Image (cartoon, rainbow, N blue to C red; front, side, top):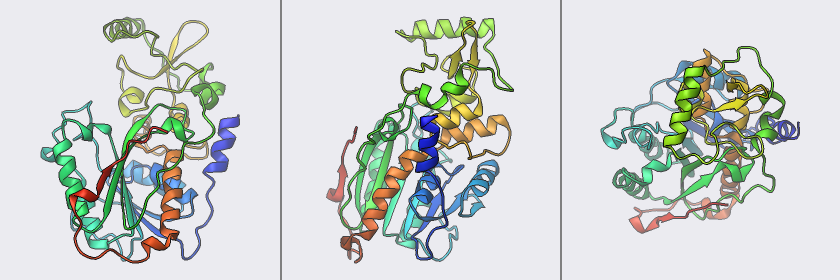
Length: 341
């Protein structure tokens, strides 16, 4: 398939050069961000508390992954040119309670501490767009702390569909740098769900699970209440809805599923979810099926990660970043740049 070939080409890994920038990947998950950065030539070191996700990272990527729970005092080694990560989003997701700072899953204190202690030349973190709403006040606090460390901070909503990912997935990206920054330009190629999983979607893979009659009834009620114009099945002629842990792994009205020619509806299998997130077929996930679905749903799409990583590489090569800004920053250095491609 064209899309599978595209993934193999774009996300092919080779041993990084000896002087390649070192990237500390915090809250690394299964390595979606790291895969994009390694494909761009970086050396990554992951830190992840979930053992299955950590095992997946180590099994597929060139860099190591440390199975650890990050704190503000975690020892992350001796060097960091770049710090990246996806601090847990549950405290800020519109699908959760949005308790922000009060949620004990909040990973931002550890992330900010790492930036302060290791002084990377640039940092990147990804999170849900919910940070810009009910928890906007806390998000502003995060920005103020990072700006106070001497960084210029910019943030943008990026939709993965504009970067070769066959999925409409909008997420918040925050960049802290010491010079100038240019957001990645949209990919010239756009892919549909059919491009990604058309060879699987209308078949019955091993381990397939079908919606029962009662589930079909529940889905119909859900769609009526949601005023769906078109059934929320996976439509192969367009990009997929956002892939999440909930709609991959949960038996909900919003679950991702395909409709077969005989009218039955089948839940997605792991490889379908992985392709919709732009993981190449050689990338294998560890753990139970449920754990694999959660790893996929939590990941940053690797193609989008590579687009960011390519811009980070260009930034590091620019002469403007060779001298660290002195003194403390100010809130005016934080800029909002909405980027829809």
